[in-house]
Image (cartoon, rainbow, N blue to C red; front, top):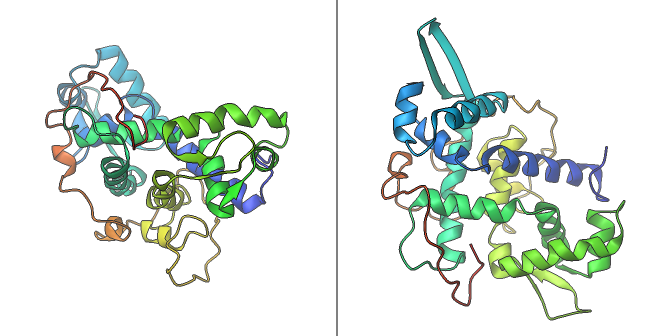
Length: 283
């Protein structure tokens, strides 16, 4: 069933990216995935890495990540069970530095430096607003559009005025610009800079190597040579994509100087809210 009024390939692409974001954005999911980077761990070892989570919360989160095909539970004996990444989760990790790079350059500057994990969580939160991926996709493809046109393309089965709440949210988040009521909408510089992130999520969710993000018909680099491969493929959601080369995450921008194991340095489960300075998308 079509989710938008866009062509089937575009609709499928948007649905895949939205599904990928739904897997990793829920609170603590990214932290648990990063805690599992390396050798499989026993439950108590994971609990020590995410000590702010109650025992019952961690159990539920691990089960959800297993159901999503990102974590594999292995029962060695009745008393020894370990949890580790699936191949699909391992292929996702190189996308996270792209989110950090985008957040550091485009989100408002907080009063104190934020750990990379918090940059990831803030960036993911903005992308999971209702209809956000579809609206950003259309604005990137078209350059600018009226609210009525966006409604026809993104939510054809709904009253066209329903497009304005998500549009206003994207404007408030700093990802979309407009000159006012009656004027068309367009991507802001920060929204346009999401190309590497959304292109990589699209490639990952389609089971493709992350290097294919450069050839995405909407989010790819304008100067990238065309590819003969049809963009939308039909692998199962749990099909493990080919592992990307080590340099795949640096094709669009230089990666920040951190390693997965260092994401928890100075990380805290909660932080004070800083007043948003002008000039950047709100966190």
